[in-house]
Length: 244
Length: 203
Image 1 (spheres, rainbow over the protein chains, first blue to last red):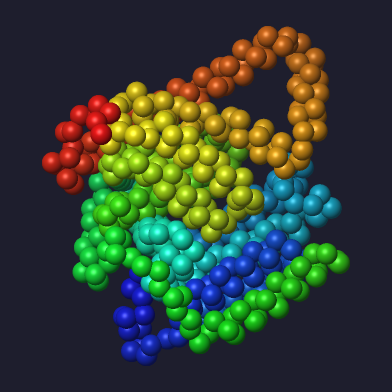
Image 2 (tube, rainbow over the protein chains, first blue to last red):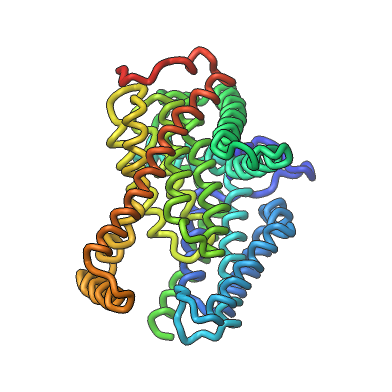
């Protein structure tokens, strides 16, 4: 979810269309159904649809996902699945699959879920998500969830940087427990400092959790299209799972 | 809750999720033998740090609920069971620390110990719910078979189980203690006025 919302212009200067909450939920539901029910070819076809949609609505998501780290994770999971199935390890997939087809399916599945999450994260304004959560009674959950989603990359970066900084100073070779405590304190302090900036930004926008009222869920022009397409995909996935 | 409290909870949930997603994926991939101890210990350590920093009831469970929601978005095989485990660990730790604004250290340690120990019983309970009571019969037969193969007695198996639980209890207690120290250290850097408040079950 984009914390910046729809207020900030895109780099091209043109305001790109954005997902609404209904569209995001439709994409999420369709993705989970496809990943869980369809065979590899179906998942691949759906992934192509997601790539096209991301290129239209959230090109930044595609740039992030095309990075070597994500590719490495996806391929590593595929390789681990292949080895696990090859060695007869307990893998939560039907036993009739060959190691290669199982690995390919898991790679496609992971790539599809990453694409869907990227599309939602980079195209859905935080305001839409918060409004939806407040509508279903989880007061302030939407705000905290939005903060958590947006802080995830920072959390990963902070953990990695702190670990490397302490490792380079040989902190882990002397007092490990002390090094662990220092590392944890640094990570928490950095995250809290970043959180304070988020608080300032939220307050500057006039966000006050005590004054939050139930707002009508804003609908975008894309919602109807996404809901219909996702409904068709979910129906097809269910049909396939029951009859194939 | 204020905007600051909500933001802090969100940030701690992101930290917990980052550990679950990055370290968890890695440890599961390499079949690290103590993943069931390491991940809950770190996760609950983060949640208990949040409890000490935010100093409000409901903080741990809110962080657990957010982490579970983020877990749903992470890739991996089946996420429902880890999500349920995170929620239960959060609920247990929340129950122990419920009440005082700044829980005493023994409460933090107990919360960590109970939360981490849940991961021993979670697979048994969740599989029992999913697969029915018959699964317990299968497990008992498997245990009997294993005892025969290794030439162990039931007492030996119980001692081994006790030691396994003890490892979880100790790891959780250490997480609670570290959480208190880390929260104080971080607050000293960010908000010094709150850092030196003694945790003594004050309301």
